[in-house]
Every structure is written in structure tokens, then in C-alpha cells.
Amino acid sequence: MRVLHYLELAAQLERSGIGTSVDHQRQALADTDVDFLTSPWQGASPTRALASLGGGASTLREYDLLHCNMIGPGSVALVRHARRHDRPVVLHTHVTGEDFRGSFRGSHAIAPVLRRYLRWYYSQADLVLCPSQYTRRTLQDYPIDAPVRPLSNGVDTDALAGHDDRRAAYRDRFGLSGMVVFAVGNVFERKGVSTFCRLAEQTDYDFAWFGPYDDGPQASRTVRRWTRDPPENVTFTGWVDDVRGAYGAGDVYLFPTKAENQGIAVLEAMACGKAVVLSDIPVFREFYEDGHDCLLCSTQAEYREALTRLAADPSLRERLGENARETAREHSLDRVGDGLVEAYEAALEGEPGRVVDGDPSLS
Image 1 (tube, rainbow, N blue to C red):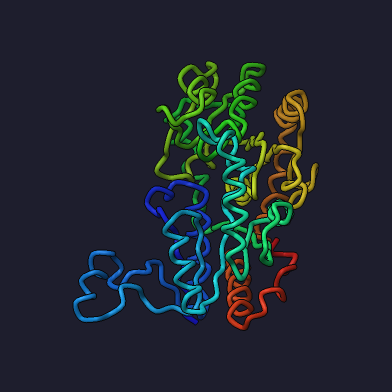
Image 2 (cartoon, rainbow, N blue to C red):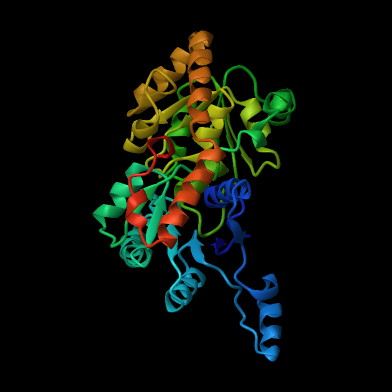
């Protein structure tokens, strides 16, 4: 089996959750018998591919199945190529209209148009993979005309090893002390930056958001407002070269997001044994249990109460963190690899529907 495992705009998405998910997939596939390509071009570049035309060779490499992880014109062109050559198409849902809202300036206006486009695009697939049952239901409501199988984004626990060793250095670097409330990832309004900062204004803990943020015209006004003039006890670090330092420096992972398809950083925090405080939204109810491996909150008052409880009771933080670590183990890259192989085999055999429900441990 030879799979073209394609990520359009790979360089631009390197620091995003999409880029991380694709890295996880490729790491998982590396431990299977699947032979996968990451570039469609002969010679791995368009220039070399065009040079091959002189000898009458095709510009595109040979593959048995196409797996696309983005939604742009390059992906559409490859889907059409696969269709012309009767090759199965697997499309991976990293973007929905719902989770696009609140990401960039103007995203609320674009989201309804994007949803209509995604309904058409995902319907081109023989099989659609998505991170959660929540996302599956979202796509079915569009509706899309293709079977949908949930498959966790997974978590790379090996890449997080040694996070505790970086605790002192990162706390000193950013002036953090006491119980540090933190978040990891791109700073968006959808991810709850306003709630994050308002909670900081109402408490005395140090808050740190580790991750890049836009400050230009494409950034939302809300993000510009908070990152340019944050509360005194909030630090926006920008991009950090070693994310292990973020998980080492923080104590309570706070994620008051409005919408997620899964949330890789949540799994990473859990894998590091951190207590996590999350929005009480369907996707988190699907994976986690309030009071066992997380605390789920719906209002600002509930978030504030959760932080107060965790500050007053270190044993609660430890218990939640240990349970969270066990939950993260259920999302190993081995399981991701198994799920991808099952999906590819079903698509190649013309029976994608047989893996639609999937293994519950993978979703």
C-alpha cells in the first residue's frame, strides 16, 4: 500500500494544531507497513517534476490512495487527479465552519460560506476521518455525502519527556511563581482569551499563555486588545521553541474554549500529569469525566471556583493530574496508526463504511 499523505501549506501550518496532528499521523504510520509519500511531485518538488516532462514522465508520483489534510486548491486538484485515476480518497477534517469562527478578523462572516464549501469538499471523499464523535455529528448535520469515521489526533508522549526538567528555567524566564495557570497554542478569541484574562483580573495567580498570536490587520480586535495591554498577572509569551518548557512551568491548564474538534494541547497537558480546567462543551464530555480527570466549567464563576479549589487543595491537583495521565495513554500514536491502517484498507477494498463506527478507544 502506497499512500500520498498530503498537507497543503505545510510550512505555514507547522506551528498549528493541524501541523501537529499531521506529524502525529506520520509518526504513527512510520511504525506500520504503510509506505507513504508527503509530496505528490516527482523529485519532491514542482521544479523537478516539470523537468521530468522532457522525458515524457508524469509530474506526479504513483500512489494507491490519497489522504489529504487540508481544504485548499492544491488538495482539490489532487482529489480530482485521484478520481480520474480511480484511486480512493480519504479526507481528514481539521477545519469546520464552527471552529473557524472566532479565529481571525472577519471569520464570523466567512464561516457560513466556508461551511457550504466544506459540505461540497468533504463529500468528494470515499471516507472522511475526524478527531471526535462531536465533529462527526457536525459533519452529518451539514450534511456531507461520505462515511465519517472518528479517529483521535493522538498525543506524542515521547516528545514531552523531560518537561519537569525545564520548569525552573521557564518560570524564571517569564517571571512566574506560585500556582501558574496556563494555556498552550495559538491565541484566538474562540479559544477563550477573554475569559482567560478576565479570570486573571479577578485572581492573584500568575497566568501564562504559551503560543503565537497575530498583531496585524488579520488579528481579531479582541486578541489585539488583550495581547497589547494584558492584565498585570498575565504573560503572553509568543512562540516558544520547546513546548516542554510550557508544560513544565504551568500547574493548572485552563482552556475556556468555545469550540474544538478535539484539542491536542489538552491531551499534552494531561500526558504531563497536569490538572486541567475545561469548557463544558460536548467534545470534552465525549473524552473526559468531570471530577475524575478534569474540571468542566460553563460560567466565569465556575472557572474561578475551580481555580480556587485547585489552589487550596494540591492533593486534588495531583489526583486529577494522575487520572489525566491515564486518559492520555488511551490516545497513543500506536492506536492512531492502527486506525489509519484500518481506514486505508477499507477504502482500498471499496468498503469504507465498515470502519465508520471505529474502535471506541480511538474516538
